Amino acid sequence: MILLDGKKTSAELKVEITEAVKELKKQGKKTPHLAAILVGTDGASMTYVNAKVKACEMVGFNSTLIDLPEETSEEKLLQEIENLNTNNDIDGFIVQLPLPKHIDEQKVLMAVNPDKDVDGFHPTNVGRMTLDLPSFLPATPYGILELLERYKVETSGKQVVVIGRSHIVGRPMSILMSQKRPAGDATVTVAHSRTKNLKELTLQADIIVAALGIPEFLTGDMVKDGVTIIDVGITRIDDETKKAGYRLAGDVHFESVAPKSSFITPVPGGVGPMTIAMLMKNTLLACERKS
Ligand SMILES: Nc1nc2c(c(=O)[nH]1)N[C@@H](CN(C=O)c1ccc(C(=O)N[C@@H](CCC(=O)O)C(=O)O)cc1)CN2
Image (cartoon, rainbow, N blue to C red):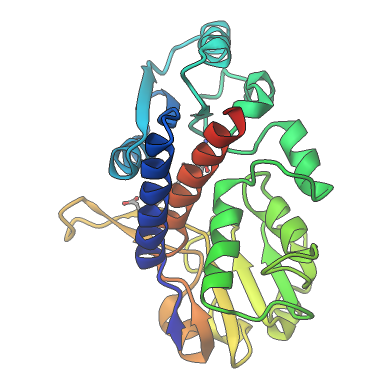
């Protein structure tokens, strides 16, 4: 069993991005600048946004954090987005999800200028991705492709089951892996809450992407020997024995699945850190595209 080490791979990627930033500076070009909008005080979202700001520091980007209270109106958020759209110094920005319930997420994501949409969530970028045109790939699926490629996991002609059809992970993952591209050319099945014969499907799968958000859902009896497992789930489970007061659980029951796997991502330290690294890569790309 080989661990697909997202912590190590993301650190390598950050070194590569740091070198690219130094090169931009040498050429007298602009320093990439990422902005992040956080609405509310959800603990996990705060952790992720802080990690994004820290990653910017590490690779030599400028960053701006716009921290808004939970009760922020949709109108105020749209105004902040417009300010970032028209601010020439900002190369790319993200609105951290999920948003509070009173805000229409789709309306917000559609307000982001597609050229600055380094999350790749705007319909223009989703459409371009689907048509295999240059776009910003959503960071989590992009990070998974990068892990598969760097660890030379064969995907061509393989049976892939993606469990989950979210706009952020499951749906784009299924599209990207079915495309003619590195870490693509696979035969992809998308399973979801209405799928009736899930175990039949997962037992056939060469690669399983678990992105349904149910902790330790995928167990050893559901996978075949030699399977590759990508665990996208990160759920905080209360645990008073831990310093943080919680432990992190993936969607995969690691203890029973790992012994049957040829490759598997851990949680933490798998897909999560890759998400941050690929956001940095998209921001670099946004900056390079501008100049
Ligand atoms: N605007 C966006 N919102 C959200 C995205 C996104 O890509 N753009 N994805 C997720 C959350 N996410 C990034 O924002 C994210 C999730 C997890 C990690 C990560 O590094 N996890 C660590 C554990 C960290 C911890 O909780 O202690 C790991 O897996 O090792 C980074 C980013 C939803 N929202």
